[in-house]
Every structure is written in C-alpha cells, then in structure tokens.
Amino acid sequence: MQKFFTIIGGMGTMATESYLHQLNLRTPAHADQEYLNYILVNHATVPDRTDYILDHSQPNPLPSLLEDIQQQSQLNPAFFTLPCNTAHYFYDNLQAATDIPILHMPRETVKEIKRRYPDAKRIGITGTRGTIADKVYEDEVKAAGLTPVLPTDAIEDETMTLIYHYIKENNEVNADLFHRIIREMMTEQHADVVILGCTELSLAQEREPETTFPTADSQSILVDRTLELALKMRNK
Image (cartoon, rainbow, N blue to C red; front, side, top):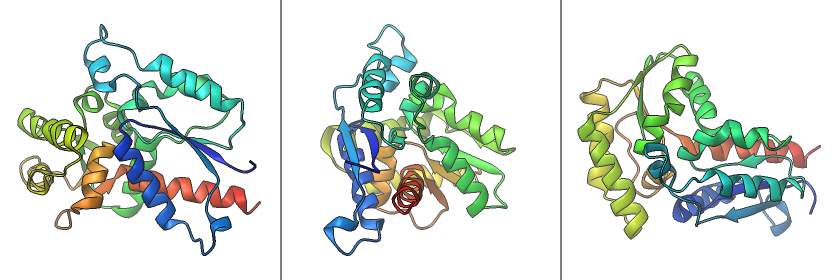
C-alpha cells in the first residue's frame, strides 16, 4: 500500500472508533477508492496511561507504544496519529524512536483555539487525571501565551466518573453529567473556551453535543489535521 498513515489507537477502543468514524465521514469520497489509505493499530492492551502517570509502580505503557511505533515505522507510513490525549505524556520518547512525524493532538488543539477563538484568554482544560497531572495541555496553553484554567477536584471527580464509569466501562454517555462538567468549567472556573482533552469526552461530544458553551474538541481537531495531511499526501 502506498501513500498511507498509521493510527496508534485502542486507548480506548470506542474512542478510536469515534475518531475513525469522523475521519471517514469527513473524507470527500464518492467511491470506495476515494477514501484514505491507513493502518489502524488498535492496541487495546496498552496499560492504562493515567494509572502509570499517577503511580510509576503501575505497568508502564511506553514499551507497548514504542513497539507499535517501531513495528509500523518499518512499513514507512507518511505520518502517525495518536488519538489518545493522555498518551502524549510519552510523545517525546515516541517521536525520538522514529523519523516519521507524529501529529501532536494537544498542540494542534491549542493552535486551533487561537484561530477559532482569537479573543479567548482563559482556556479550560478537561481530561483524565493523568492528562491534568502531566500538564501536556497546561504547557501548550502557556506556550501559546494563554492562561490555563484547571478543573476543581469536584469537577475532576465528575470527569473521571464520566470517562471511566460511563464510557469506558459501559459504553454509555451520561449527557447531563457531560454538560454539567462543561457548564461548571465556564461558570465556576470562568473559562472562555473548554478543551475536551480526552477522546472519551470527544466521544461524548459526538453522541450528546454540548452546544451552549464554546468547546475545543481535541479529537475532532485531530481528525481535521489528519485529513489535511492525508489529502495533501494523496494529491502529490
């Protein structure tokens, strides 16, 4: 297969499925042959990223992710995507293991915020405890000259319940809880826009969209960047 990219997914599987669904929906195709060439690595058994970030005695996801990158690099894809925000904790290690570029989802999300919401200054961040603890979004927001707004402990508890109990364990989106999290980030934490910094939150947005408050859906933005690169590669 020529002119393809590789998706390192499975973290979690339903969120990866949402990423693929949106990617295929947005591809301007009118025949089978007009869709994109890609390889999906649905590595569902990668250890939990948040567990390791919060407690390094837990199983380390990095060896599994490095194995995926090294194996796939032998096939020479044009680029990699990593549709898991928390896994970007390991981004520098993964990029150092290959000459093939890996799209950086948090970085692309912050770039899109500056483009789409030029007047926004206070950027709310939601995600797993691992994503909050590893500061991957906080650092990108600061680097862009904006102010990161973190969730309170109570909001973070609600977010973890939505991600792990409802979505990961039961493949269910609690719409009231999802919308409450966004509302609290806006009204209690005074964010101008809220980053959906977990692909399970992106899945929630796909199934039960939040339309009242401005959000930046990291997975949706990754879909757009993936599509741009893939179409540019195909049209060369």
